[in-house]
Length: 320
Image (tube, rainbow, N blue to C red; front, side, top):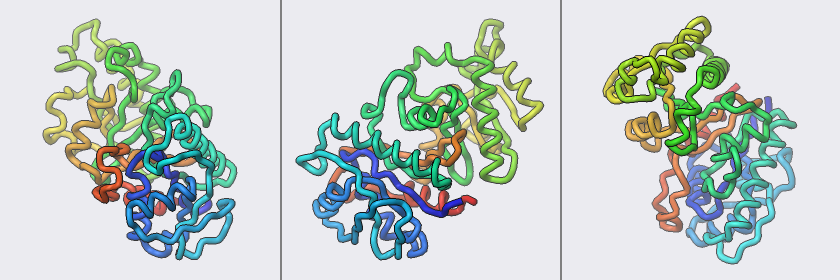
């Protein structure tokens, strides 16, 4: 497996260049030698100048070019812009999707262990059935729906939402036994593949107090049957009442599976802040991103926290 670490510069209207430059300066020379950035060379040069961050940048043609660790190597991807932190949406969309496609191609063909994409405004890639980078890459990799997993990881705990970036009104119709089985089976298999042990998994219910286990509740009709089926293959427990679970019960488990995005991401982010990473499981490689957004309110202010990107680099570097 190739040891290269690919980072996609992500949304051009963001704090991404700031966290990339800060992270590159902090990592060891050995890690610098492995890092290759996919992005627009001139944009990154202009953004470094605007941020007043001195960093040695080098334009390269492909992933195989040698890196001595003295420069941040950049595979140059075309982008039209006039102002370096105010790129028009149509140009930003073409740029972001193009960089993602290139990273996917490199990882698939060159057998590189994975890539890190810096934050992206979901509006740039949103199409029917695609609500975020997880879904974008899953479709590109021909992964069936609910066989891709978005896992937020901290060394103390991970969380996985069954449904990701969909409206609340659509959550219930997607909570089906077959969907839960696909999602949790993928989680169980790839967690073991990465961390070398089977995870202890807790599954949350959908409704307050698990709808008191009424016959027509999602807990009784869909969630409990899925858990019973999965008990033959996984170390799984639930459904747990979500309202109090994150007080202390979560500490007994490796992974918490919630029914929707905010059910697990709100408590997780309150617990770990920026000390976490977003990992996509179910692909031929690992796709990762920092656990935060584009933070447009602090662009150019040198206030961005690069801890999550550092965590991504360290995690990907340790993978075998």
